[in-house]
Every structure is written in C-alpha cells, then in structure tokens.
Length: 314
Image (tube, rainbow, N blue to C red; front, side):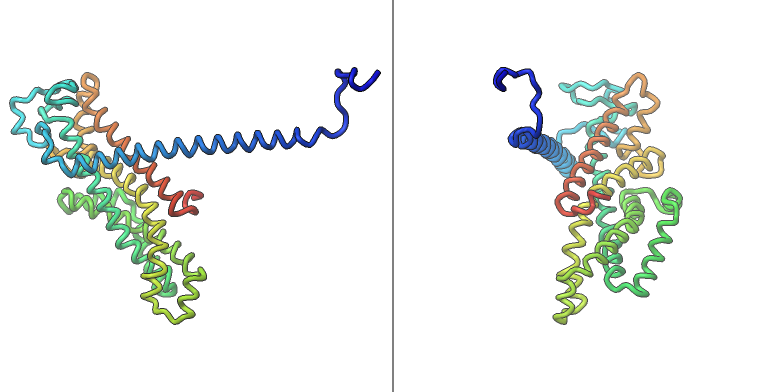
C-alpha cells in the first residue's frame, strides 16, 4: 500500500517546521492581544479617575457660586424638608438629613475639606520630609544618623495616639488637622527621598558632576532633585488617598472638623441613626469617598508606571 493511501497512520518523526512556527505565532499574537486589551482597560480607568478628581476639584473650587441648597447652617433650613429622599428633579437631588441640610451641598463642601487636607498634608510632608531625606541621603555620615534617628523616633510613636494628643491640645479645624496629618506624612517621604537619593548619588551623571568640580548645592538642585521628585510625586497620590481616609475616620470619631461643617466622615456618622429607613444619608458620602480614594490610587499607579518603574515592584 502506498503512502498516499495510508491516511490513518500517524506521522512519525519530527513535525514539519511550520507547525511549531505557527504555534509560536498564534501564542505571540494572543499575548499581544491580551496586553493591548489590558492597556486599553487601564487607559479607560485612568481617564475616568482623572475626570472624577477633576470634577471634584472644580465643584469644590466653585461651591460658593453653584446653585446649591443650604448644607452647612442649620438655622437657615427651618423651612427645608427633613430626611427628604433623593429626587433628581427637586431642590434636593440627593435628599436632606435630620437637620434639613442638603446632602449634595454637604458632599461638595466635604470634598473641599477632604481634598484640602489630603493635598495640603502631602505638600507639607514632601517639603519637609523630602528635603531632610535629600540631605540625609546625599551627605550621609553624622547628618544621616541624626536625621534618621529623629525620623525613626517619629515612626515609633503611634499615629493614633499622636492625633488624639493633638486633638486634645489644639482646636480641630481645617488648618490644625492638615498640619497634624502632614506631620504623620513626613517620615514616609523622608525614607523615600533618602533611599532614592542614595541610589542616584552613585549614578554616572552625579559622579561626573563631582569630577568636574560642581558644588554640592548644584548637584542637589540640578541633578538629584528632578530625579528624586519624580518618584516622590508618583507616590504622593497614594498618600493623598490614605490621608483622606484618615481624615474621614477622625471626623467619623468626632476628632476632626465638627458638625455642622460637613465632611464625609461626620456626614456618615450623622446618618448612622437613620441608616435603616434612610440609607442615602450614609450611602452617598460613602460612595463619594470610595470613588475618590479609588481614583487617586488609579492615578498613583499610573504615575508609578510612568515616572518610577521600580516602584511598581514594591
């Protein structure tokens, strides 16, 4: 019987070269397609996150000019409905609380508080912790030992105890809460800036600047600060999200800004007694807080992939 007639016989020996090549080609194409789909999803998530944070910033900045019902002064809500349910076409689209205060207005003014505290505390942490970490990582020696000891001492102090002590000494207003959380952010940025400075100090461009006789101030400002700042800014968005959650937790416990000045935390706390019959009192500020923290984390992840490739491996 000829070979052409024995079609049911298995082929012995090595398969043709194009079979293996085709398999590799299919696998590579499938991998590229999956990677392209992942990048597309990440891009959509990033733009949604940027849009949400941008909308919050715009609303918080223009809150005084928006046609909002009263959300901060209970004496001006004597004629307002109490515990009104959400109604998009009414004067209170997201309803009112037990004092007749507008939930939408409270959420917008709460965004102003949370974003101010989060970004303000991070700016303070970057300015103080980043500068000290830069000096410690560059000069090393006794300066590094002294600054690292102070930083470790601050890290060893329980943050909750520190916040409780500060709240009992100073008035819990916007400025004091921002400063208190900024103090807690200093050690984080100190360690980040110190580690990055020690790494970049051994790079060729820094060594070349030293060999050419550049002063330490020029090396710090021209060579190290731009490189250290990129990774610091990438991580700062994540810290902003953490501090917003911290401020909301303090407000929920009554240790931060007090009612009737709205924050997301004290709005959730004020709505707890009526949670079963009026869940929107807790649901609305809770969802806004969740979306804000999620968006900041998404932006932070993108910034780390873009500006700090080593940070995504941590």
